[in-house]
Length: 410
Image (cartoon, rainbow, N blue to C red; front, top):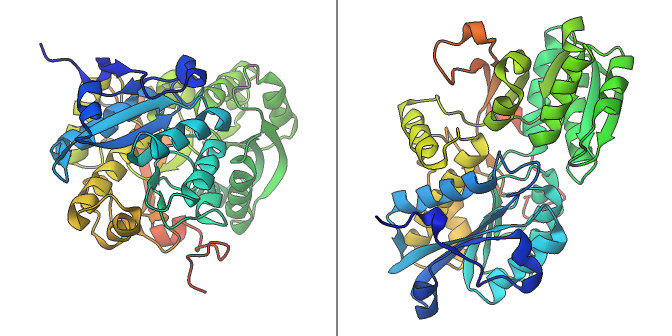
C-alpha cells in the first residue's frame, strides 16, 4: 500500500529549538537531489486554531498540488509543513530557515496576525520569495506592512466584521457588546465592527479584549450580560469563540434574547459548539462547502482525506496554492517578482472564487456570503447547517485600499 502524504514525516529541516512543536511533510531522498520544487505551510497545529487550519491545511494544500499535477518547472512539488505554535519566536526562525537554507519558494497559511506580520518583515528582505496569507485577518498586511511579494488571500478583519454588524444592526439590534482578541488582530476587528454598527445607526455599549487561548471566559461573558447589549459580537474563532458561546448559554444570555454575531466563523467552530447551541449565530464567509456542485465534490474529497469538514480557511489554502502554481507555470520561474504580478493578471479560475480580483494592495477581493446557523429542525440532511441570508458585493464588503500601502496608487 502506498504511504499517505500525512505519514511521510521528517524533522530534518528544523533547528533543535523547533523540533518539539513542528513536523514536516517531506521526502528526504528527493530533497537531497535538488530535484524538487518546495513550498511550505506553517500554521497552528496545536492550539486554538488547530481545527480551523492545522492538519486540514496540509491536506488542502496537498490536494491543490495533486490537482495541479504534482510537478512544476520539471520538478516534483514537495510540501513542508510545520507548527509555528502561534509564536513569532517560533515561526520567524522557521520561515527564515525555509527561505534561506532549504530553498522554499512560497509559504502559505501563517495563521495568527503576529506570526503573519513577522513573516512580512522576513520576506521584505527576500523579494524573490512569496508569502501567501491564507488564514490571518490583519488589515495591516495590506496597509503599512504590504509587500510586492506577499498576497493576502484571506479576507481581512474589515470584510468579515463590517458587513455582518451592519446587517444585524439594520434589522433592529442597535446595542452591541464587542469581544476582540488581545492580539494584533484585536483593534482592527473592533474598528471594523464599529464602522458597520455606526453606519447602520447602532452603538457599542461595551467592549473587552480577550487573551488568546483564555480558557475560563466567564468574566468576559458576565461583562457582556451586565452591558444589557442586544448583540454580542465576537471577533475571534477557534476554542475561545466556542467557550464564549457555551458560557453564554450557561449564564442565560441567549435564553434572554441576546444574539451572537461572529466577526469570523468556521465550520469546525460550529462542530465544536454543536448546532443546537450555535443556532442563530450570524456571520459572513467568502466560500462555503455547498456553494456549487464542484464545491460539494471537493468538500467530500477533503472530508474523506481529513476525517472532518473543511473550513473556508482550508478552501483558501487550496485556492491560493493552486493559483500560485498556475502562475509559476505561466512565467516559468519561482521568482516572486514575476509570479505575483502573474497571479494578479491571471483570471482566478477556481470553483470557490467568484469574481475574485487581486487589488494593487494585494488583497484578494470577492463577494461575501451573509450566513446564519440553522436550528437543527431546519436541517434537511447531515451537515446542512447554514442558511445563506444574503450576498455582499466585494465593493461593499471590503474597505477601500489603504494609502499607507506603498503599492496603492495615490
